[in-house]
Image (cartoon, rainbow, N blue to C red; front, side):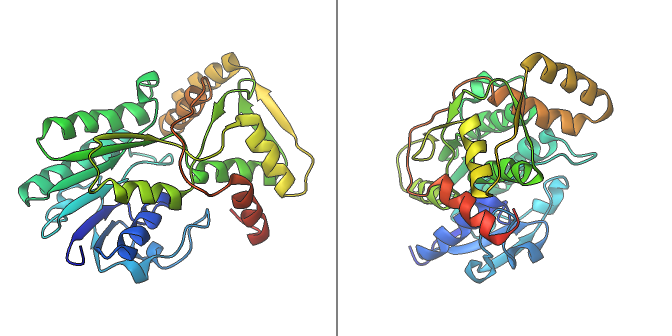
Length: 295
């Protein structure tokens, strides 16, 4: 194992950092594919660790410029990709990053004899295929399945970094939730998910649905955030129809933001509980965010 080399695409993101660390600690050489190498040096916004010390090589590339990904996979044994569009960017679409960017990486992996490709998609994606951010993930999954490349697709229910966004709203003093907040889900910490990702290298499962050890309603997660901050909970439940109207208006003026809103509305509309794993607790994550004074 000491000689195995992995390319981690999206290495400076929330999950990517934990995956870099986990691969390195298990004896892999890690090549980090990032747009901005400086991000590897400092802690992330949701307490994800600086990981420069775990990286053997840095490959600088941008999924929007698919030519910049050429030879990213040269000399590596496997590829792990959580490369994707996580927040609105003007002039950049999920199709460019999640689908075509990853497809360029897959083509490079095939050309360079990579032995396995591990990819992060979305749990319950079949219920949200009207959402660009979800459909583009699954479009790439279909490309991956058709390629002949050995693969594993991992579908997390939600990340603790998503809960960091709730925490930031609570810090500002008020939270808006789509729906009545009663739907349940089980977010997972990046370090717990990273173990699942690295285990998948030698595991036989082609598809893995995964969530954290605790199940919450959306209201409960936000009440916990207020409690960690020592604040009285202040939550407004926005009826779904108002969300739909706001989505329509936002789509006229800001399509990238509308895409993110559509995902938030969609995922709030049903229970999203995946098979549980991990040992890290959301209350501890919120407590640590509160003690750092930032998220």
